[in-house]
Structure formats: structure tokens, C-alpha cells
Length: 359
Image (cartoon, rainbow, N blue to C red; front, side):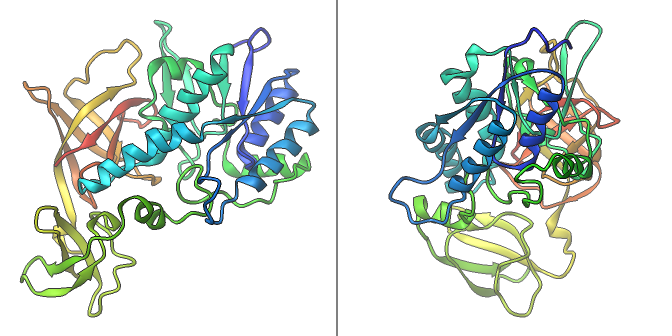
């Protein structure tokens, strides 16, 4: 793609990845406009938020390359859309992924409504690639860095958003990005990668949920025996497959089931209980990233249900009623309703789309 005649917006987060994105574009003789998306807690919140430091970093990098930086306030959109989605899901006992919806609703959504619509392309620091097929369709493709690949976080964006997306470092390994940042003396070259939910800085996920849903204590029972193990503070603080942070003696314990009606958390004992695994599960609301918009046929696929380097092989069966059943080659740990199952071709190169796990 010839970028010389394209009007490009770069989303600077303050992190090293998006900073190297700007360097790469400037190196090609381009002068894109830079934007920092402002989210973060309400003004009166006392949570420890790193957004001020993020903005300082983004400002320094944009000035280094002579590009203007504009701050776009998407605070209300984030809390209205992404937070509402997250809280509705966890309240129903599901396991949502706010980062996935943040890309669709904020980075490529609310930003586009406010300023992005003035640009041909929106460049981000995601580890993902795109390619054009023989029919001119644009595919979302995986990064060569299996640990950093972020196609799973992009698997709910719309096709029009993908057409505008530009991933200048998507073909690189993380080490290469760090080396460039170090060589170019970028102010954030040594900065650690952000952890946790996009835009929430150092805010703890459980604190985030507690702020909106509070606590709702209930019993914790052993699945096999019905024996009471202890008490939980709210089912929404736990996810299927969880092992860490349970705080019960005599373990290890795994979360295997949530009874929303009775407010009971079921756990199973052992380092590898069979109850923590599933080999077959259903998904709903398939969101296709196949360029021609065709439905997902019954075929061999690879998939992910969480952000890990590993891809699982499966046969994807589409039923007459439109439901999709994933038949994995081997049992998968921690399959939880509400998670996104992200589907890829057999070589896990092209992303076919994603769907919500229903079991």
C-alpha cells in the first residue's frame, strides 16, 4: 500500500509500541497527526491512574517527530459502552473481555465518530497484520510474535473499521520494537508493557467490578461432594477455570461452575481436575471477519479462548438453526460462557472472526 497519499491518524497511548509506530511512519517520510484517547476514572476518583504519565509520554514522542498531538476525550463513551457491556455480562455470571469491545467501541468506534472520520487510515500499535486477497478483500492476520499477537483483541471490530486499520509494527517481534525504541532514544524505550484492562491504568479489575456491582456473598461448595468450603464475596469476582486468588485451604481448588440462582460457587480439588476441561462447546453470534461476509462453513479451524500464544485445533460445525459447535481436538482448560472464541484458518494465519461461548 502506498501511504504517501493517505491521510493518517496515529493513536498514541504513551507506550513503546505506538511510539515506534510513529517512528516507522515518519521514517517513511510521512507526517501523520497524533491523537491520545483520554479515558480513566471520573475526576473525583482516588484510584491510582497512570493516564497523566501516558499523556506526558505521548506528548514527548509526538514533539520529537514534529507531529501535532490532540487529546480526544472518550471518557463518557467508555464508561457508557464498555463498562455497561462488562457489568451486564459479569452480573449474568459470564466472563466478558472489555479489551475486545474497547477496540470496536472506542479506538475504532468513538474515536472515528469524533475525529477518525477525517482520516483514511488509523494506525495503532497492535501486534497484528493485514493482507489483501485476490478479490481485494482485507484480512486480519496474525503477528509473527506468538506471545504478543493481538488479533484476538481485534476479532470483534467491524469490516469498515478493519479497512481503515493500519498496524505498522504488526510484522515485528517485540524485541525488535524495543531495539528500535532504544536506538532512537525514545523516552519510553524502557517502559514496561501495560497490564490489565485497556485504559484503566493501575486500577484492579476486581475493584473496577466492585465499584459498580458491590459484593454479594454466598457459599462455596465442592462440586463432587457438596461440602461447604467457604464463602465468596460475589460470583462476578470469579471465572471458570480460576485457580489463583481463591484463598481456601486444603487445595489447590479450581472454579468449575457458577449457580447464579442460588448464588453458589462450585469448586473442584486437584491440580488438574477433569471438571475444569471441555472438548466440545457451543458459541453464538458469530462476528465474521471474512472479507466477502460469507457465513462460517463447517470446517477445520484453529481457535483461542483467551490471550495465550497457543492455538487449539478443532472442527467447526454449523447447525441448521445457525448455532455453531466447536469440536476441539483435545480438552481445553477453563472454557467459560461469555468468553470470546476467536477462530482462525488451519494455519492460524487469517482470523475468520469470533463468537461468544455459551456452552
